[in-house]
Image 1: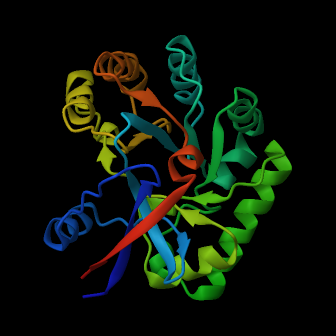
Image 2 (image 1 turned 135 degrees about the vertical axis):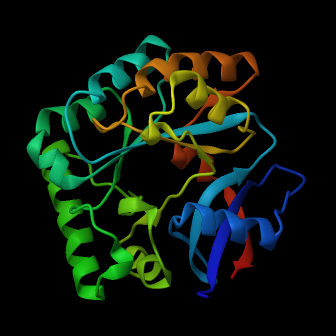
Length: 253
């Protein structure tokens, strides 16, 4: 089994660090069959998936790779609920098909992350294929939106040690998540709400989708936002979550 390094971030002002056991983390990686983001440390590129903080802050993230019907209602739901901070991981080939929609994400003030160019599993590719896709994705997103992403969520969330290193060489930090809404399964609005609200804690990165395959996300979002606000949570972007952080590492087998 491959050895991965997984990273937690902790605000400098935070007094204590909550460390999950390697066993639990290993199960998490196995079940999700996904990988985390590139976060540079003296030990090399690491994966970022949540921050160990005391403040009740969380980060909303969305993946989008196809379709034009769902992004509008999701953006509208965020705006109507006064959410100013969220990150959209955009497939560059999608942005080519729908440049106005890609630009609207940035124009509304949300952060843009790369979801690669082609929606293919990098772990099945040779290094040169991965590099070509990363570079093409950066180029296309920059040309269309005027923003060059520095955050990457690989297609399917899949990475290995090679992908971490190659992304780091391109100046990209690979971002995973700690809370999966399960919205891509279309399990029902109430189930999506339950998946998120019941499991969220301070420092979590929440995963949603904005492709046309998700039919219920735009309905669940307002309730999720309202209920998390009622619990005292605020919403920040990923850069804010990682700013002024130092790292603790653990080995995942």
